[in-house]
Figure 1: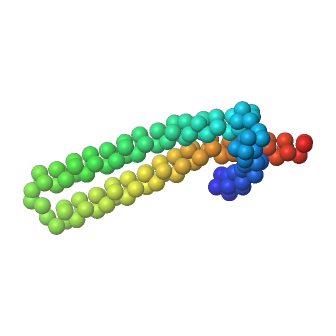
Figure 2: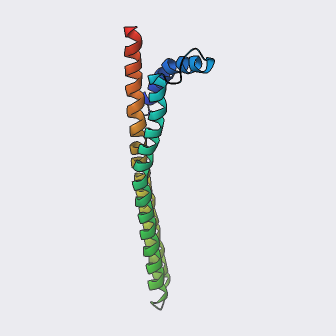
Figure 3: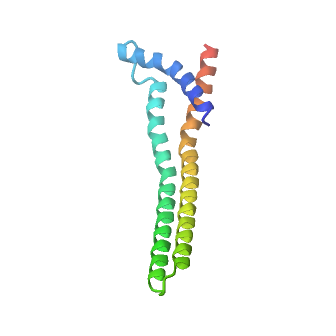
Length: 140
């Protein structure tokens, strides 16, 4: 997606920018089907992206809440188990670092999945438009 999307966007823009300039100059209509499609697609892609990212937000909040709960429980357990030796405190610190590492890994995975799912609708539209507009230009 990262490689094809910029190229497809460039192809799409090269076909659509002249239409927009004509419409701004008054020699074309803003009711041109391609211009209407262009504006509708932006709204649809934004809605699909927001929907895709909503699940990622919930998953990240759940991971952070789980981490906070585990840290609080471990801290309370350490405080309530006298005597606290250096070995106990060191073991607590090691487990805390492991939980933090696990949280970081989970958030990274959530982020990469959400990036892919958030870009997928826009990628699909941009590549389809580039193919359609290029084929349309060849037929002319």
